[in-house]
Image (tube, rainbow, N blue to C red; front, top):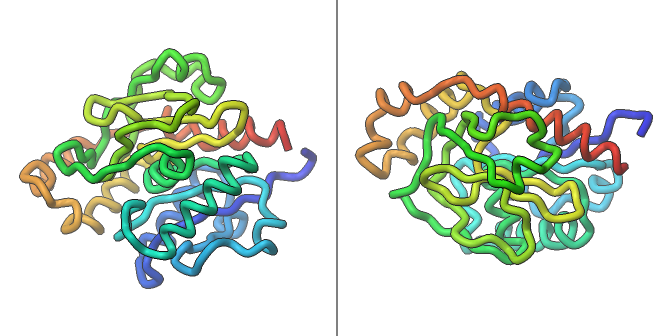
Length: 245
C-alpha cells in the first residue's frame, strides 16, 4: 500500500493507570512511529466501534495491568469474542503481546491458566521451534534470543492448527501464528526495552510478588538485559502485514 498502515493499539488498563501512556509510548518507539500515529482503545470501554475499525488496518494488543483473560468480567468476555470474530475468523492483521497473546489463544480455542510457579518477570531466553525458524517474521534471528517478560498467566494448550513458533524454559508456548494470516502473538513483550521493563516491573512489583523469587527485586532487576532481536519483531510484522493490504 502507498500510505503507512493505520494502527490501533488495544489496551486493558484502568483509566488512572500511568502505564497506559507508557505502553503506548513503548509500542510507538518499537514501531518507529509517534504516539499520534498509534491511537488507543481501552477494552474496559467495550469493543471498538465500527467507525474505529473502518480506519484501522493493523491491530496491536498490549498488556493488561491489573487484569487477566481468565477474569469473569463482561468486558473480558466481549474482548475474547471480538478477537475470535475480527482477528481469527476475519483474519484482520493482528499482533498480540502478553495479555494479547493469551486473549488470542483463548479466542482461537486454546487454554490459559494462572501458574505463579512458572511466572516470568525480567529478561529470559526464548527459543524458536522448527516452525519459528522457518517463519518469515523470525528470518535471520538467532534461534535463541532474549526477550522481556512479565506474566503469571500462561497458555497451557494451543488451539488446533495454530503454528507454535517459540518457547521458553518455563512456558512452552511463547509465540504463535494463525496459519495463512498475519495474526501473530507473543507471550513476551517485543515492545519493551530493558529500561522499559524495569519501569514496568517497579510499577507492578506488589502484584508480581507472589513468590519468594519475585519478591527478590534485586534478583529480578539483575536479570534485565537488552533484547534487540525481540524488539525488531514489531516493525518486521508491520512490513510483513502491509504486503497483503
